[in-house]
Length: 299
Image: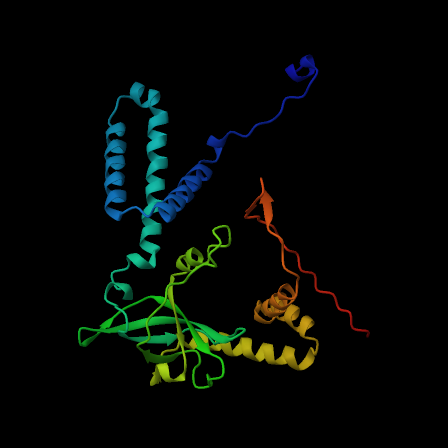
């Protein structure tokens, strides 16, 4: 008769974490990414700490068997900290601001910039928006190779037909920082853009840029954009309802711009919201706003 029957209750089966060491290592790696992302520590400090940990790991390997057994927890901690440092170093390296060729290291206000449009322009409420990649900065009388991504906004009312994916433009309008809405409780759009490698934005009219004759395109990427445009054209020809068209675009090819416009329109029509209050003071409130699309047209 088993102990579980004698006690009158079943024994719960527990899976020890040590059976899955990769889970602990992955957690340590993620912790390093988060720490570096928010603290932005210098690479020298990360490497210095990593060297100390590696030295401790080599020293622990030379201990006697008894001491190795008694200090197993310390060796495990050292391994986890090494993975934390790995996550921190990887995040530091992926941060666009730390690149030696980042345009911000040589760029100053009103310097000319050479940029490549990296995607088709998307229509917004009062402008057209696209992602662009900085290729060079004209500083100190010469063109310097540079990298970095920015958001380009073209004023509505001006022609954008000459600009498309791969177009290269030169402009000397000052770059603007990407700012949040001002409410500290809202979505941190600045940090989100930085995570995508986007560090600035610029607002252009037709007279603010010059289009180069050469284009900088990638054949496969251009093919994907062409296929997406053809799919969008087919959907627009066969689906007359704007609501259904936006849903079909989002579900079939992941194109959400038309769907986002409809959501934006509905939210803008809502009455003014009353702020949440605590002890008589307005406070930030997080909530999800579900939007349901219903076909009200009669078949």
